[in-house]
Length: 500
Image (cartoon, rainbow, N blue to C red; front, side, top):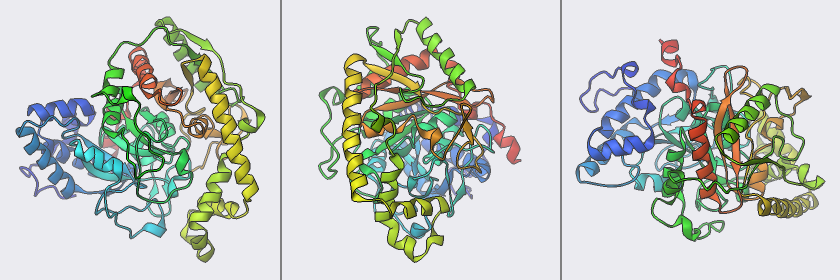
């Protein structure tokens, strides 16, 4: 990447500076005050990406010229006294969302030549707040696989250990933030696709109440009514800063709804994470989510240590699990995804199956056999799941559970072979996150420690619908107590040295 035409044209010494460790709120503060020029920051991060990403595979498109142009505009706005909340803050966008006039491939050969005609709603919202889009991140094909690899762009690796996966489908977004390419990233989450990669890379990953962030145009996607735009960051305040910008209502999105009154106040989300937690909250801890879900022993032990620390710090946490009916416990999440993939892409699959990731091709093939009766049954099961989740949150204000039951596994494997001593299937690693999509409730993944291999382990906080502020407020309190766990690998990795 040639940066000689930008700024002063001087070579940037990536290893001697630490701008990549700055938070979004610190970058914005410095840019607005004139202590940091957005152009210099963006040049630095572009150089970092060009040095590291050949090993990581997080990025599928880097718009260096566009990013520099946006940075120059941010510096002009700062000089004019702008108070935009994300002024000068770089961010990345998952490849199933749109950035105007840039490639948007959805991780698929079908869209290899597609150029986005406009920004996605969330992309435009961040830009309007002063943020700078520096590139697009890899995802699994159609965002429908639990690791991040596809036939078009290849494998994305975990910055903590390069032979491990960052999870999926927002693995490129997670890797970009964890490696210090940007402090924040946009992803999507229809079953855990933001929260699980966040867990595997030591980040904060948030899925808001369904409909809180509009997404009125873009690619057709399976299970859209279970999905949300998701945020990835290295701390809770940056997550809240993004949500203050992204939360909104747009009548063009039939799933969008007006914000609850408490979320319409200026900086409502940042206010929540910087205020004192209500000590009277009824918090439940469920190590298996009431579903007898398997967890590796080292991961379970680390989570129990974290829960003990939280209790010692004064949080009142009760052991309790939701009560699910058998048809909810055995809800076949994959069935609906497969059926909708078949509806969206079945014609192309019948014409040329080789155009698809073999895993996705198999999902489409399965989807062609699913009946209307099966899909109708799933609708009724979802209603019961919501009723049972609502009943639980009548007794408790918040729920803690694992985000993922394992440390990151080989990036060349679809899933670990065993979990908790039991044989694991392709989605056994992903069982703790989808219930919250099914029930439309907010959930955030936050780091809580490290497993036996020294890789990140994460807790998940969930709450009732529209309790997003409460969920993030508890996350901020846990961040204070478990601050040792909030260490993105950019702080100590040898990625730069490996590349030399």
